[in-house]
Length: 247
Ligand code: NAD
Image 1 (cartoon, helix red, strand yellow):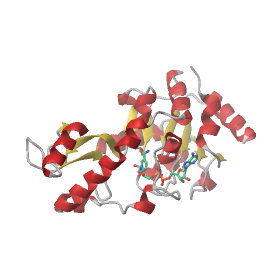
Image 2 (spheres, rainbow, N blue to C red):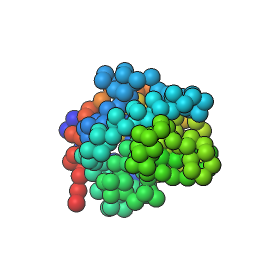
Image 3 (cartoon, helix red, strand yellow):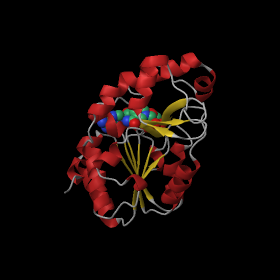
Image 4 (cartoon, rainbow, N blue to C red):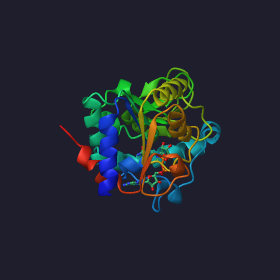
């Protein structure tokens, strides 16, 4: 590990534009389970695809029940060493913006301005109408849910859903455009805590590499893209990035 962290330190020092790309693994030390590890969310619940959410009131109720069951976990989560290390590099001016598959809002909490967090899969800490996009806070949804089940938008009557991207739902255009641009114009791309199997998000590390960036993969399990990386650190993220937590 020591030599991996040292090499990472050298690469960070040499880089002027670093783009981190994070997945669920950076938040496991904060108590939020990832999807695919043993004990991960998928080993317990089959995901509800977008078309099922739209077409089935029962699916909407189930989606909201699951979300509320997770609320104590999300509410208690605080940024971990990985989040804090990246926030330090951001404050130091090395990171223009971060690209994340996470929906837990922890990069914002750790100090990134919301404008500098590119969320590929949305955010679970608030809700949106799937028709007109009107935002709702979860307390409002909870109250309506307790009274009469999964709520619809007060403006257009379409279902209200967490502001996340479900399987089968279109990717957010603006986030995809910004992530593409960031990957194309960095000199160091850090893929952290992602199994790199969810597409199109998993395409960004190779895009960065093909555009000339050095690629580092930090994940405790092998990924299919390890062979293309300049450095692979197959180790715990908190321990790996802890030394980079600054002021
Ligand atoms: P994933 O579950 O597919 O992969 C996470 C990877 O992180 C795994 O390979 C695992 O081995 C590794 N990992 C877990 N803890 C680690 C640690 N402490 N140190 C090093 N590695 C660790 O997650 P993904 O690639 O992000 O894709 C799944 C999707 O799940 C994403 O689209 C995301 O939207 C969603 N998701 C988000 C959260 C969150 O916001 N925190 C949580 C669960 C799922």
